[in-house]
Amino acid sequence: MITRIVNAEEGLDEAVSLIKSGELVVFPTETVYGLGANAYDAAAVKKIFEAKGRPQDNPLIVHISRVEEVRDIARDIPDVFFTLAAHFMPGALTVVLPRSERIPDIVTAGGDTVAVRMPKSPVARELIARSFPLAAPSANRSKHVSPTSARHVFDDLDGRVPLILDGGECEVGIESTVLDLTSGEPVILRPGAVTAQMLAPFLGVAPGSGKVIGTAKSPGMKYEHYAPTADAYAASSPAVAALFYDKCVKEGRRPVLLFGEGKAAELGDRERISLGESVDDFMHSVYSALRTAEKEHDVIIVEMLEGEGRAASVMNRVMKAVGGKVL
Ligand code: AMP
Ligand code: MG
Image (cartoon, rainbow, N blue to C red; front, side):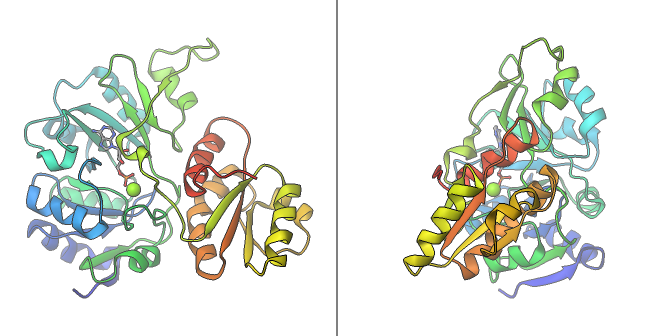
């Protein structure tokens, strides 16, 4: 199969036809690129698992273009869903709800719940509005780092998908927050750019009350996701990063540091890929930096951020990428 990268607006008509004929399309979103198929068509959705090499017990997110479409995807939808939708949709929030009968087993990995999100990208929403809700995971080969550009997708899925809609770099840069509304009290299954602190006021949790929204493991989180092909570590300080870097050089290895500008001065002239100035810059660029780094280096040393909220969300992904290895 020939894989083409086409400007998102220009490729939209073709993408609509492909989805309607049961094929896959890669589409841009603000979080990471998605690999989509008609969510109502089990045979089409099966192709996603084949293209990615994804285990079938890892469920997909159903992407919608209007809040009201949720009624086709889910049932017994609590009022709080619509409150959250008013504030965070479109956006980087995925909500888990009881599943409607229209959604085939393969989308939910056979479970009774379904994950729903409305992406910010107008092209993604137009594609959905003109075809079907799209079941989609991230558009990477299973277990690799999620893609934040069309080029990243091509590197992983060349020959496995017909069309990649190129919408430029993803603004957010890590996967959506997954919030489960099906298990009594709201639970964050996967942290992301929409944080517990941002959600709390809409979930009846008083700010500063000390009460936190629960966290638990999302089905997909048990896999060693997001890993680069090079040996990767998280560094608890610039000093330990520099020491380890120098040791690697002595051993004839080719290390690189992934650090923000704030700590850059402490790293001297060691080779570094910048993760920008702010936590949001770090979030935006960390996957791209991991993909760049693995091409030319065999050791990747990533800065550890302290703090809650988005910093903790990015660190959740960094810890996955380094397989829990901390210097
Ligand atoms: P990806 O966007 O590639 O990370 O894949 C979608 C992820 O969404 C899965 O790995 C799960 O973490 C999450 N997800 C999808 N459906 C459900 C569900 N029904 N319940 C809980 N989490 C889900
Ligand atoms: Mg993924």
